[in-house]
Amino acid sequence: NPDNLPVEKLTLKIAINGKTEDIAAICDHWVNPINFIRYKSPKIWDSDGRHIIGKRDPWLERTQFIIDDLNWLLQQPFHIFWSNLIYNHSIVCCLKSYLDYGPTPFNQIQFRKDKAMRLKGKQLEKVVLNIYKRIIISRENDKEFMNEIYHGTIIYENFILSVPTFFDICQIFGRKYPNAVSDIITRAIKLNGSYANDFKLFIQLLHNPFNCIDLKDCAGKFKELGKVAVFLAELWTTIEIFVKLCPQTAKFFSKKVFLTQMMNVYENILPKLYEEHREFDINQRNRYHLERIKKLLDLTRISMIRAFRGITYAKISRILEAPNPSEAKHVVEMVDRFLTQISGIVTEKFFLQDYNKIYPIELDLEVVSQ
Image (cartoon, rainbow, N blue to C red; front, top):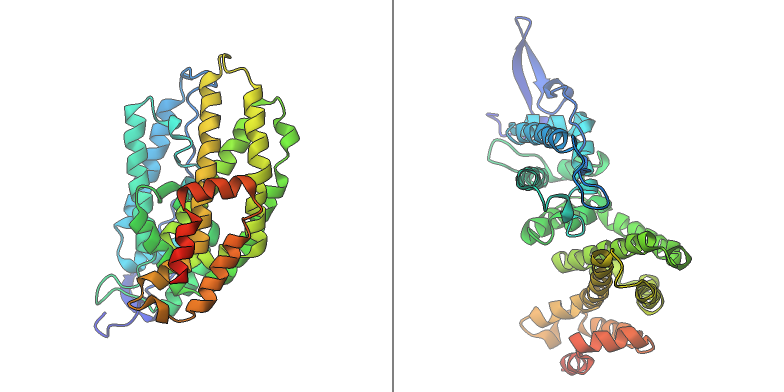
């Protein structure tokens, strides 16, 4: 690249059948026609924790194939990496399958009994994260780079990164690799402003799962209660982490309709789930699972409180970080909005009580009054 051209404008001279031809640096010529297989979660234990013969080794073999293929991709030069990512659609499908079915804090039981599986899982986790870290890099060195507008366009229009993908990345990687996750999402949003509109639409869709929770399905049904508990814990821990790592996205969650739905879950759905949980006999042989459900419900509560705090207090935190907080831009507007949101929970008996234990409202009022 003697002219220091961005990769999207670069052509390379290569020999084809004895002739020299100019080939675009980003095109399907560089694609390795292999099919990147999709990740599958291990199904090697039955519901009673007994090992299912013949399931472990195929999972290890399949996972190693994925690791090898993704490591190959990661080692490619800039133009080959991007050509394959754009034109070999099985790569994005492979990455998304890991985000869909990879280990989270709620299904770590997948690996807890097997050292080889834990090791293989960690290897795959590392290479998938490194792929996403590379995806948001526009310039690798002085010779290998792309225009940021082009970069933002290809990751958005080819669905390499999307808002649902951001949430999945938070769920899978956010606890162990907070800085990397924050960097991935923050850079992507800067590269393409369309993600902001997608955030608004996605958060509107989050209302639907709240409305779809049918408490009648949980009545006396242990398995259904467990599913709802896992769903709520996964959802709210992800939102909590997301807002914490990317506070600039708090504004998308701060709409009244979302906060109202949030209060409905806390005030009406969670208490009924606790009530259903108490109906089961704690002395049953499923005691471990009952205790796990209780922990998931408790985790949901604390995550909802922290998420609400992150959503409503994000702009106040920015004001307090300013050299002269009282002179910060739009300070009055931000404080008024925070006070309005806090006033909105006064009628929420359970939430207000629990929130005030962790984040005393009197202290907040004292801070903003200054």
